[in-house]
Structure formats: structure tokens, C-alpha cells
Length: 573
Image (spheres, rainbow, N blue to C red):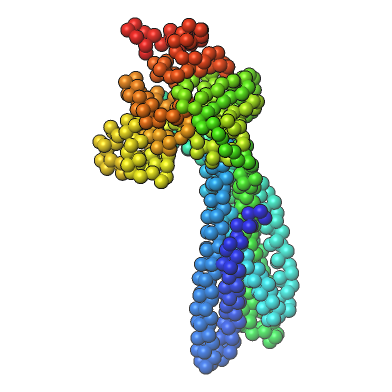
């Protein structure tokens, strides 16, 4: 019922669909009557004066019915397709606003299924309801009326056969309905395995795990098949049982009609018309049973979509703020743990103030909380204790778009899109000129390989940057962030694929071009950050030192251990 509101913009089409369908069904109901006239008043007495004009009338009404049918299909398509488009847009928009922990909870495969198969199931129900519901209800009501006009004794056949068909439908669908939700869940599993293997294809091949992943997919696919077969076995009972009931009703009509013809109370053509009407009535019941299947399937899909639409983002907009301390970041007593995690927090009691224009590095062992710390700045997650301030204001006070406009971030994993080089860089600023794009690429040292590409900046990048090396993807990602000209620029171990010389040159260009920008750099190598203004050392979620390199070498044991572990004969590695 909640999703019904998506049909309101297409209400005109939704109303025109049943209206034109009424015209089509009226023509179909009229045909048996006209045919009985041809048989009784034309064929049997061999009267061509009845056959020809009545045949012409039948032909004209069939053409009119065809026009009504085309109009009904067109209007229904406009309404259902528009409904599906708007619903898909809203679900996608909601997915884009969900926080990371919420998308992880749903899983990527499940969200893909909801945006595709589930919305398609509901769209098909809308299309089916607008056309077939009206059509089959009219056949049911109109057919009964027309049969009773021919002979009231046919009412006995209808009174017996209709309840039998309804009971058959109710019995089968009672057991089939719960299975549709199971099928949707199994489809989620198939999509999840497929998504993992497509995105992680290189790892699968590198570890020669194709056979293992094929078996894993086969299991998920087999589970889906088993669930589908359970539904199909139940539904397979439906049509044969309905056909038996329908054919029994036809036999009864022929028997009763034959007795009436023998008693000269009915004509042969009227009996033929009655057979056609009972077939239309019971066929309408069969089609309505198919609609109940669609309702069951769409009901499970609608529930899954409402789960997404009703989910409020865990990280929501604040009331709005105007930070006055441009480029500052401060952590006050910040603690953080990931949702549903147990044990000690990832970050514990962090106090750190980063000045405007400062170049701060964050160093620490794997799992010490470096990425978790910087993820709190643009509110990818919220701290569970304490405050994170940007430009002197609590990040929770900002509207998310306003906050993230102030921040540029280059993630550890470089994400590129199926677009041109220029389009990927211009994600940093959709209004950027070609000159701005080329300048950003030069700062990131991406121009060196872009100029060698077949179409330069207009070269199309393969999905997820598959046509580029790791270092090239990182430099394009850096160019994108540089183009944004943010107050705060975060590098989350985003130069790991670059050699030390290229990285040093890149950092020199960044300092020259982004003077005044606050730069926060997460790195594994001391050689990458030793020239930063300060280096914050994280150890098990706590800051154990924050000072320039020389001071840390004297005062911070953890930093000294990291330094010694990276020293080789002949210098630092």
C-alpha cells in the first residue's frame, strides 16, 4: 500500500487502462452472441441476408476490440514502467544515503536483487492488475450475466464450478506464498557470490581458486533452483486442476444445452454461445489465479523494498553549521567501534588537534585504527564517544553534503568508473574546465601516462579501472581529489603503489599547489611521511606520540620500532 503512491503521477494512464480494457472485453462478450445469431438465423436456415451483415458487424467489432486492446496495453505500459522507474530511483537514492554499516548489513548482492528483480516483480504486478484484473473480472461478471440471459439453468453450472475453482486457487496459493520470500533470499545469495567473484576475479585466478568458487556458486545456484522447484511443483498443480473443473463445466453446459435443444427451448447457436461464455468465465478464474501468484511474488518483493525505503540512514544530516576555523580538525576524547563488534574499541580516547594548513601524517601497525580515525572526519561512521570537529564545529552539526564538500579523500582502494579519463577526474568538480582537469592531472603526475593513451583525456577507462595499473589508478584518484580544491585533503595509504621517487615528487607538487590546505596522510612507510609537520603514531587505537620525525625518534618507542623494522643495509626501505 505504501508503494501505491508511486502510481499517482500516472493516474491518468492507470484510469485509461481499465476503461479501454472494458471496451475490449465488451467486444469479446458480444462475439458469442453474434455467432449464435449467424448459426441459428443464418447457417441453419441458409439465410445469407443474416450471415453477411452479421459477419461484417463481427469483423468491425473485432477491429474495435483490437484498438481498445492496443490502447490498454500502451496505457498500462506507461503507468507500470513509470511506476517502476520512480520506485527504482527512490530505492537507489536511499541506498546512496545509507551509511556503510547499513549497506554491509543488506549486502551488495541483496541490494542489487532488490533494485532489479524485486522492482520488476512489482512492476509486472502493476501492469497485470491494471489490465488483467479488469479483463478477467469483467469476463466473470459479464459471462455469468450473458449465460443467464441464454438460460437460467446454466446458473447451476456456474454455482457449482466457481466455488470449486476458487477453493483450488486458495488451497494452492496458501502453501506457495511463503516460498516466494525464500526464493528471493536464495537469489540474493546467487547475486552475492557472483558479485564477489566478478570484482575479485584477479584474486581468484592468482590463488587458482576457480574450482572452489565454481562449487560455491553451484551450491548457491542449486539452493535457488530447489526453492524455485518447490514453488513450481505447487503451482504446476493449479492449472491442471482448474482445467479439469473448466472442462467438467463445459460438459455440463453441453449436456444441459442438449436437453434444452431437444425440448425446443434453446437453439444450437445459443448452446455454442453458452459453451464459449463458460469457457471465458472459468478462463478468467484461471487468469486471476495467475494474478494471485504475481501478488504473492510481488508481496515478498514489496516487503524487501520497504525494508530499504523505511531504513533511516544511521548517519543523518545535522541542522547545518558554518565553521569559522577553516581547515582545522580536532578529536576530543574520541572512541569508536564498528557496529556489532565486540571487545575493545578500534579507537580509544583519541585527543588530537590538526591546525589549518598543517601536513600531518598518521602512522601505525596494521589494525591500529588509522583508516578508522580518518573515516570519522567525513562521517563515514560516527564516533561512539567524544567529538570530532571540522572548522571548529562538531561534524554532527553539518549537513552531510556541506561537510563533505570541505573534504577531499583518496581512499586506500582506488575506485574508478566506466567513463573517460577526464570524466573520472572531473568527479572532483563537475564544473571544471579541461584546463583545470589537466592541471590537476599534472599535479598528481597522471599526465605522464595519460598523454600516452590513444585518445588522451578522452580515453575510456574499463570498469573499475581494469585497464590501468595500481599506480595509475592511484594518481587519477589523487587528481580527482586535487581538482576539488578542498580545505582538508586526506590520503588513506593512497600512494602505496608508487615508488619513493615518484611519491616524493608528487608530495612536492602537492605542497606547492595546495598551500594552505590541511593534508592528512596515512602511510605505512616512514620514508613517505618523515618530512611532514607532525606524525601521529597510533598503537592499538591510542595515540602514543605526535611530533616531528626527529622528536619521535627520541621520545616514542613504538615509532622507533617501526623505524628500525624498515631500516635496511644502505638506507630506509
